[in-house]
Image 1 (cartoon, rainbow, N blue to C red):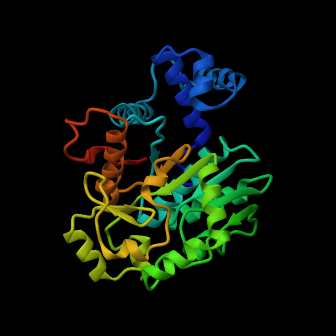
Image 2 (cartoon, helix red, strand yellow):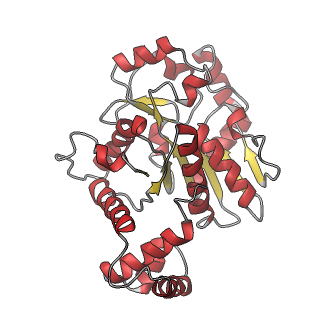
Image 3 (cartoon, rainbow, N blue to C red):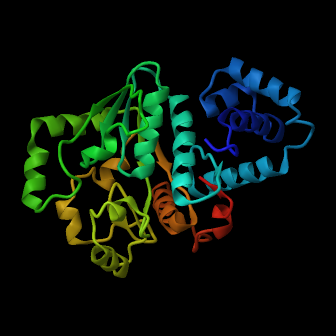
Length: 313
């Protein structure tokens, strides 16, 4: 990970913020951050010893906490972690992936099953998780496209049991998709995904850096047509408009992926995404989630560019 992000420091700052600024009890912080009360006490003590707490929180950390709190309040989210990053898209994806892997592994029991979506960042998340794990993690694929769920060249250790759909992401015709969905092995994987304790998805953009475009799964003409139809990004390769609604196209009929309605029913869904090029897609996904929670969103007509300027969530 680059030197700008330390998971332990961020966890310490969160604990200190909630304790000193929000007047949470140590027990409430324990439940909120899903860590033991003993660990909360140690984090608060370390915050005092390290000078993080001296009746103020450092300006950069304060801004990050304010952004996180604003996102939680606006969109009704359970938790938000903003990761400071620099550099190009590849560096951004790697920073997000490492931070996400630490966040997930800190909350993942050894017997849990975890659903994993498709994309470059999520492939990196999976590889980092599998390297960190002391016991094999159980990973359930939410889409076809086997290669993105396999160990990369840098993974000398890959401690994971993979439950994959043996199919490309897109097939040549809808009939093939339906036949594969009828297979007993695929239906078992779909059932496992409904029971998994945690679900991790990416949020794709319509830029030329999108995995689905870089890997030539879709052509520039496909992307242009989707953009003309109002698409701003995708979830599990289902394209959505600025309000988070599905964009109708012939591509969905050839796509082997978990339907968005199924995704909304899954446990503990974690979105991993960042970058200016994804601001509109992230906003659309959050907008749709907020609507489903019955949250008033009249004041959210445009994505906040300043939230994405120096930090990514």
